[in-house]
Amino acid sequence: MRILVVGAGAVGGYFGGRLSLIGRDVTFLVREQRAAEIRDRGFEILSPHGDATVRPLVVTAGEIKGAYDLVLLSVKGYELANAIENFAAAVGEHTAILPVLNGMRHIDVLTDRFGASRVLGGVCIVATVIDEQRRIVQLNDMQSMTYGELDGSSSARLETIDHDCQGAGFAANASSSIVQEMWEKWVFIAALGGITCLLRGSVGDIEAAPRGRNLTTAMLDECIIRSRSIQDTVLVRTRWRVPRIC
Image (spheres, rainbow, N blue to C red):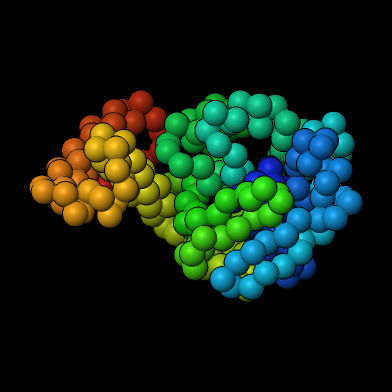
């Protein structure tokens, strides 16, 4: 399976790098300056699970020749439109697009552009940053990637993706309820980001403050209620089924 990883940042670089290290056919789509850096010296991963130097294949948008089997999309939401234009030439009749962005809107954007049959759902759990030396630094030992068909079905392509993701060192899971898992991450991020911004403090600060835990629980409840309202709207407007969050 030919895999195109869009971006070699903290997330795409980590998961794509781990796949490359076990011999998977991985190419990174990057900007010209980043391509020159990687071609010259590769990039480093510093991790509790083992440090490594990755020397993968790289291409820029103008160098894409032919379709890939899988496009692993891990850019930030505000870069989605540019990323789509950059990797569009890599999408063929049988290409699967696996986004691991936070949120839900990107699913609609991708299906509108490429068709629902090409788009999978995805969730990744990892804490990584790019340091001043352009190294990918993993901050703790959490590392997983989950993927699945949006309608919850099984498929040959999902089995192939799952096969190729095994053995890379991170937990790789094919899911029959990927949309549910995407919503659960949305609720987690919305609640955590909302309470830390609202109270202008870290999780530890909030926990230590009077009624801090109560306020956090109230924020979580509000995010769950809001997600249910959004999901009801999605069910009316789209053809693919959205499971209800717990």
